[in-house]
Image (cartoon, rainbow, N blue to C red; front, side, top):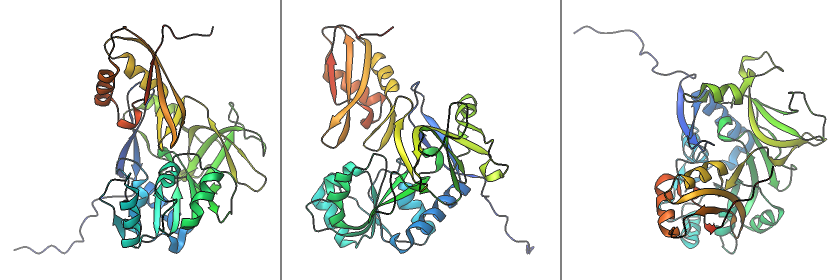
Length: 345
């Protein structure tokens, strides 16, 4: 037999895709965000550098289709950390608290609303709690601080590889949503892409190693959301991702989030677009028109639909049809029949 003496060919490269994750789209066409292996390694470096020894014994209790699972599965495995898999119902607070104690969990990542449903009133104590996907309130920080040694608030769209910046909310080190991760630049710009002065609001753009390759098979949308960066000649910062978020800088360099610049809202940590849900409702038999809004709810926000429809429309059947067409978190909790939808000229 012939003996080969050549080294094995490396089957992959940093520019290759690591995964594609889908986010909601305004036209009912979900957008597949292409993340490279280089993107993932950037994020791993950011986590380990910012969290240090607090990133250990990591809880995995989220849906793997949600990109926070990159924080709780892929990155800890790459870093040689232990992943503590929770196999129970995430809404079973007693079972989840027992999991935290039994597995000696040191790091939990979830949404503020879910953390508020699971941790207060328990004897569970974890080293670090990372929250994202929703706005973090002072009331939530106060309620959760008895059960953790540190609370971190992470901001970042899927298109910037899970997270682009971090704020330590307890003990308080940052205001707003904090500062950028290493190898990321944040730009608050006007409509004409001019940098806004400190304190002035503008739209947030992100550049750096976390910016995704783009959307799968969506060249027009890529041209709109991933634009050439006029502020840098560094290849690592060649693109600016247009977040659609409004923000402003504080004097100390921390960033304050001011809300969305479009119709997107956060429901249970998922970013959804109200127009997409309304379009799915109008597609159902017997529905003539629909508007969807987000409303306050005990665990954060919920979706409410107002629709013009045939008088004999069965809401139960409508919900079932929507459940087949949309993810569960995008199906409105409340439906109200109205005679017409007011329009402003």
